[in-house]
Amino acid sequence: MQAHSLSLSSLQAFQSLCHGAAVDGGWWNSLAWRDPDARKHFIAGKLALVHSEVSEALEAFRKDLMDDHLPERKGMEVEMADAVIRILDLAGALHLDVFGAAMEKIRYNATRADHLPANRALPGGKSI
Ligand SMILES: [Mg+2]
Image 1 (cartoon, rainbow, N blue to C red):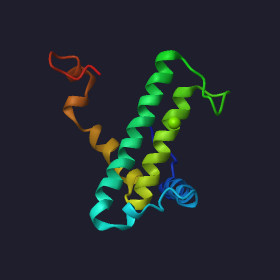
Image 2 (image 1 turned 120 degrees about the vertical axis):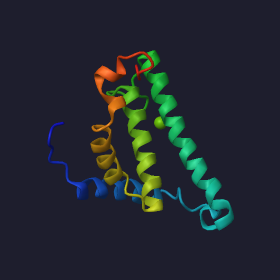
Image 3 (image 1 turned 60 degrees about the horizontal axis):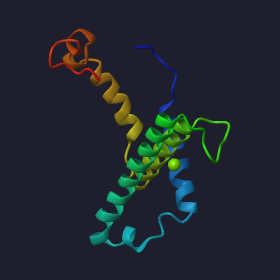
Image 4 (image 1 turned 90 degrees about the horizontal axis):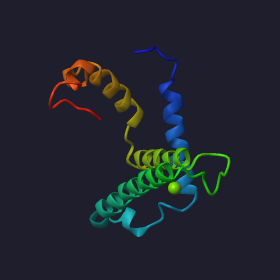
């Protein structure tokens, strides 16, 4: 694995940017967010919206579409960006350290036997 110069604080600042933009846009004004009984459903809805962006990315990929709003960019890349933005918005609201967890997960995955190319090629191995 290549060493990199990613700054965790810069990534966390990007997460704050994503959540702050959503707050400024009024996406967190719902009464459901403030109601302890309804909050879990509100959060579930936010996660479902991540799904929707991934589905949009799949459709853009299948049809080789350019994005409607940023026409110089591939639809797939813009929809993937939408998914990242939605993930980081929710993570910001819930004070989750997604980037710290991602870095730990990359390191952990590098130690997994079932992720080794030779093991993935075995019958029953992970082909995708
Ligand atoms: Mg989208």
